[in-house]
Length: 94
Image (cartoon, rainbow, N blue to C red; front, side, top):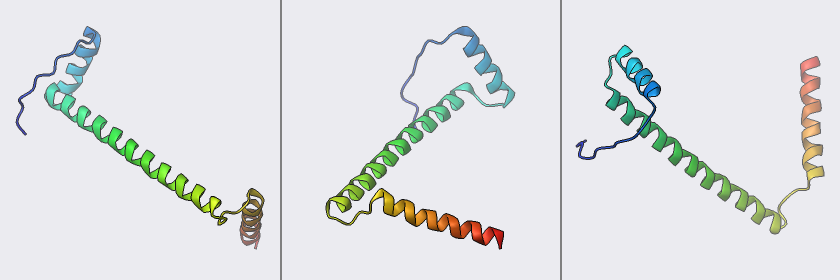
């Protein structure tokens, strides 16, 4: 990857000194670590956006199924899982 851009930023001296010290301790150039931090940040942001899109689609599908009469009431869901919990407790006791 060609390094054609320069990124300048202001940080407090203590942060810079601590970062440079830790970079030296792991025998890595500070610039390499900053690039790695940037890439990690970018990937986390992209992953978060993709997850948000996934959740929105999932919620919309669920809402559409409810509108189409395919949903179940809270009471029905609670009754089903109460039964599952009871079976689980019976299995643990037996």
